[in-house]
Length: 172
Image (cartoon, rainbow, N blue to C red; front, side):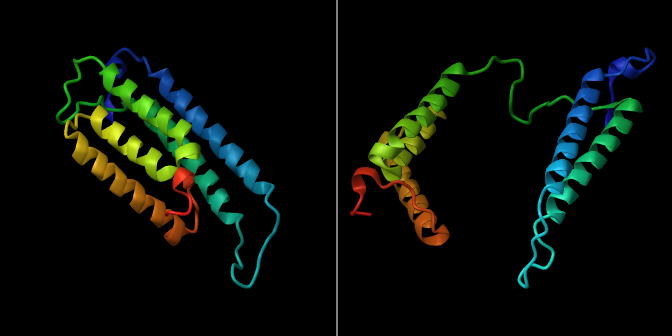
């Protein structure tokens, strides 16, 4: 459940930022309900219920969570700080790793149309593995090629979604 926040014991001070999150949940729930109310009545013999109940249920659940969370905050509850199992929270952010990951994703976004998913995906997987510490470059690239080929065919055959083939059009 929730822990007592040190500021809430004896001083009467509440963590007001938590109420902001509650308000955000209320706004999101209200928007989902409003948007669901604009869905027209659609039913068929295959789906007698239609698409309307699911977003209504989601909106109501968001409102319920917001109310329960606000009640918990009002009673003095607060989230427990992340302790991390194997992470030293006193160390700084590894900006090099983050930069390499961003570069891998940006390179994929630029190369996916001209080169196709298999090549750009292989570079994405290899670049991500490199950024996260893999130093076996050939093995990492081979794993990237295998993963991108597998995802290419899973999307194409299993899901019916065609990923760009790029320069390998006609070969794949």
